[in-house]
Length: 370
Image (cartoon, rainbow, N blue to C red; front, top):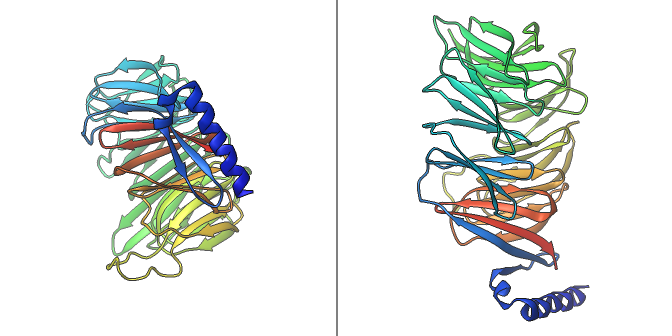
């Protein structure tokens, strides 16, 4: 099988030499358990500033740089740009829309993937947090004033739908889901001791349940296909149904990096921090694909500390400072690709398209079968 693949790969090279010799310089080979070709489709030079912000849409990425919002498709072609002039914006994206918060002007801007401004919403003040979801309902959190924290729900047209007023605790994390009519909020109080609470509301702002979590912080929230809330804590992931009952849980080493694949599973990188990099890592450290029933679909380990995870459907990508790993839904490593520059962010798209952001450059790759 390997010899056939090598012959096929050589045939591809011969064809490319005949058709366009300059293309060869853009092909890189990766030898793994199965042979893959990593093809460099294009590169965009940027400055070396750390102020560049990236966001992922379903068919490309947005880049906010020096007041201008750019959109590139997965081949590296710039499709549009929009001059917003916002200083230090808060930027959030879902599959088809971009949200830009301008706290200096108390303004929230929704932009569709074609570069058109859908609406501008005038906020009551600067925002502390913003949660978005695929149906474009938003949850806005304003700073605490007089020991009161206000959260506002906006509908998909940018109109105020409801509000929640919290009189106790510091808000740590928020999430919203229109299909499941659910808002999740994690608060922390520090009266006599540190206490963490999970509060759930419907989209009308009516309290559904309150859970005491002792001293455990919530890192994030997700939802499964049935509308059950998935809660990611520091060393545990739990599923909670609409009746506020824990229907499954799984304990892990300290969670370092995670990524939710909506309605399917969660990719988790966990392990205790090592004070000495020469010491062999503990057995519990590694990557796990956790299904939304508490079962582990697969697990693996890598030799480096991971910086991030991205996914698109069943395609999963892990990355460290200098290595990109492509894995399947059972955590089998399909590609281990060494990179020549320090990686900042990586995004994966359908059909093997990958976008890599480094300091000073944006690269558009494609991983193909040999």
